[in-house]
Length: 377
Image (cartoon, one colour):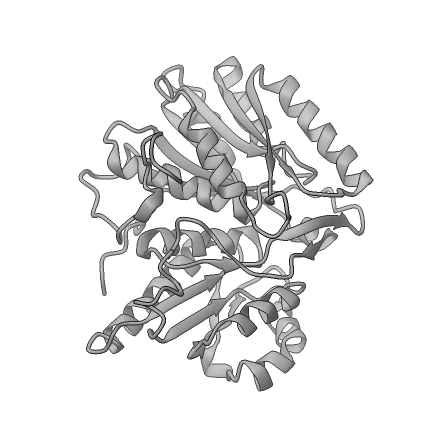
């Protein structure tokens, strides 16, 4: 099997992650920069509170407010409350309002806009950059991480890069989305998908099944000619019936439109991103070997489930430059008050001083690998 970049990976979960934050970022030599969402999600302030408790006034933050048309009044109140909390907590902050869509609301432009913002950020004294995915959408967080990862690859003294996410199945279940009517390619990932030189390559689709992702996955399936489909389901999972429930929800797709059987399913631990990461790389490696004598193949990801599993897909996409296809939310709704039980916490140390140098380079990085300010995004 090919080299796996993040094996081993410095990672922590739950209490171990909180202990890492408390000890590592309390060091006076650390000058951390937090990049996080300042939206309605109840988890928006969790990581910031932990980092602020450890680093105090040394913490700097870029707060991202994702602006969508016609927001729910209730969620607007929640978002304003989280924004106020973050701004009061972190004195050295910059707030960015980022429009998710183009003026005609047909194209997602947030990823490119957030990269433009980060290009102008002063990172000269920063030792660690922490991207908190807890309250950021895929369309914002994935291009942001892709850009910073490219910078870390090209600049030997770039700050340590960390990813954190607060997890809660109950909170995920409380949030509903009104989706766009078209799919989107995440900028910076497999951008040759659909071009003439790759159009003939057979495509393997790895959709991450989630209870309310049926419309999005149906839309993506109609848009592409996938030769094979291997649905991803969470196992082990917090809910022991999670796989059974998903199979029931997707029964029509499984038996009719997708034409998959029991042997095609991929199983990955619900709260361990590295498990899905390794699974995707193993499948992609085997497939590339199978099609080596032909024109090659493409593995396409659609991480539309939990943030923890989406993080696993992100790692695989970073390493192999795999295309990521998703459907952006036009509007969010909160159907009930989420549970107040403690959130889970995941920390992944993506790049930096703990890993040997030089790194073994992943697949070609493409246009998003830390271009200069004069280059187009």
